[in-house]
Amino acid sequence: RGVSLRIRKGLPLSSGLGGSAASAAAAVVAADALLGARASKETLVSCALEGERLGAGSAHGDNIAPCVLGGFVLVRSAWPPDIVRLPVPQGLTAVVVHPDLEIETAKARALLGTTVGLKDAVQQWANLGAFIHSLHTSDFALMSRALVDTIAEPRRAPLVPGLAAIKQAAVEAGALGASLSGSGPSLFALCADRPTADRVAEAMTATVRAQIGGEPQTWIAQVADQGARVVAS
Image (tube, rainbow, N blue to C red; front, side):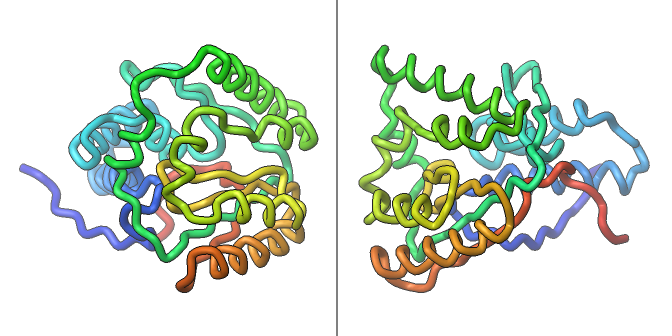
């Protein structure tokens, strides 16, 4: 026996926003509620990872874990799951802009290659450590310095016209930092508060229109401290 599900989600396809993980997380939470199983978060993550494996070709814990748990997470191991929840500084707000542009995830992944230079790897590890520390200490200045991607973004940048200009617009409007979301073409920025995020969203959206054209979709939200859950029945 099985369960037939119909999912309506406001995420565009191939957006770099973890749409397949969102579907898998919604499915396991809905099935758990339907069956009254009251499964643990760890079990829900494990089940959603299987859904991600079927939907995306491999089990990526970096999208599944935050979808199920909410907030920031550190995925030390996707299988078996070893996931560490991280604190969310008060006020931290995200801006996401999705340009009128499509990027095939497989193509974006292929651009990453199979090797990473030692210098880039060391810098990336240092930035990751600093970013995690900034979450624990609510040190937005350190977070801003740490929001630099030395591995994925430089290789995928050619896929998004005007990426440097869009990032510059975000920072000049007050963002702590900005980069590609996943494999793109969506872009994100982190901001210390909602008023700043409003200004950043306006600046990023205008720059995306100028650099890429079309009508981008823009979202502003505080980083949620809860993951997927039943909100109505």
